[in-house]
Length: 327
Image (cartoon, one colour):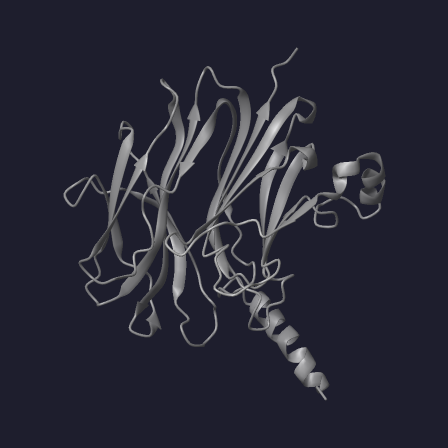
């Protein structure tokens, strides 16, 4: 027989971990992605993982090379552009440490890229292999060309090591010949794992896309998510991750209003997808792409991404809402 204290132990552990979120990381959704770009423009976005793969352990002095082919319309102007480096297992021997790295454009002697942000997360409690994982966001200088090569070096002098899981390039661009679109970009690093007393309801992170949407004019709405380690498992795990869009009860409306809206608007109940990420052993960056137009709301759309045994870190979310021309 299981005692009451044994049954409540994981719940208590989960509560303690979540309450400690402001000062410590965890497997719960306690590091939500930050909005870094949003605008309505004539244009779109381009995203690619390039040719980089899983690096293995990078010791001091070693490097990692990735190249990207930018496929933008002629004359397109970049509005927001980033190189993302996804890293994990950053440590000195058996102790967690933040990676000491630099990124250069073109090669070993190329110009240093300026880091715009670093995001990191970890288990957040003492246990085996409690190392940092995260993502570094780098600015890409203008006129870098259609072919971009980046080398990432471990520049540590203390023997610390890390692994690069992959890299990517994101370009939000303006193009006079493109349809009018509203675009949101969010970035960060929220490590999610339904384990160690964290139930799936807490192994959930939320991404918000604030502002109004001209719903009657929406032609399409494409959501892109990037999550290192997602979608690849050596064991069969049913419904190992979930994407929830505008789910009732999670918004800011009064409780009595949502039942009425569900009757008046059939799609108001939102949408849930399972097993949304795809990845493989050589490229361990999970990608999810979904058309979400039927389930959009007039304002303040949001998603929730949930782990159910997959174990991953959500790092990027991009939403593009494309509009029809006004009559």
